[in-house]
Image 1 (tube, chains in turn brown, red):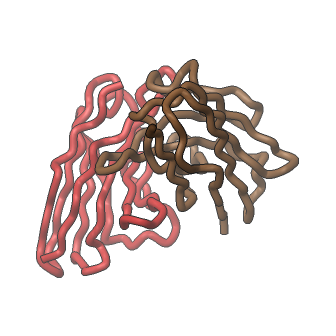
Image 2: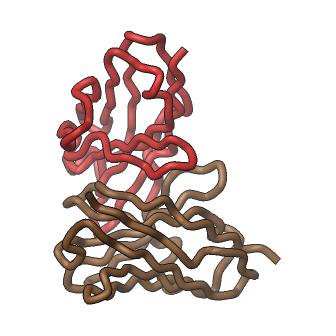
Amino acid sequence: EAELVESGGGLIQPGGSLRLSCAASGFTFSSYSMNWVRQAPGKGLEWISYVDRGGIVYYADSVRGRFTISRDNAQNSLFLQMNSLRAEDTAVYYCVRDLHFAFDSWGQGTLVTVSS
Amino acid sequence: QSALTQPPSASGSPGQSVTISCTGTSSDVGDYNYVSWYQHHPGKAPKLMIYDFSKRPSGVPDRFSGSKSGNTASLTVSGLQAEDEADYYCSSFAGSNIWVFGGGTKLTVL
């Protein structure tokens, strides 16, 4: 069974940077595209980024130019480098496995709080 | 990248059926069959319930079913059980390598 464990969240000041990590196990990580999805407090889910098996990446407008998704297939890991953080980036960030246009396995999430 | 529209709440008694709608546009729900539904118990990881608007992943009870007509997709939960009480989110591929979610529906089992 697929397991995804996020880490790296925490309290960061506006304008700061943070790098999230996701450790994958229980499946052949290199065979799957991966995503980051977030949920702001009291709000719904928001897709923010995708990386395919070969490293092609896509972003939501809300994070394009500030966030960078990457993966290390040798380490079974997914990353999200977040720069120029804003208060509106405060959210639980989920690492999510892709099932051809759907999201079939989710981590428990890591909380990012952007506040001074 | 506008969010899909879901009713904020829905409810039903045990054993009853409830349907949750998800309205998009001709650029997302109306243009692609890639609509999916997720069950989210707060504090837990969301769970995929329906993909490709009507397919159920292995392990999801057949009490859960999905459909789509035009720009609106629907999730129906039949034979409501207490454990079905959760937040439900729809999602759709929106072209241009973008995915959108609905705002979520809180399902209450009375």
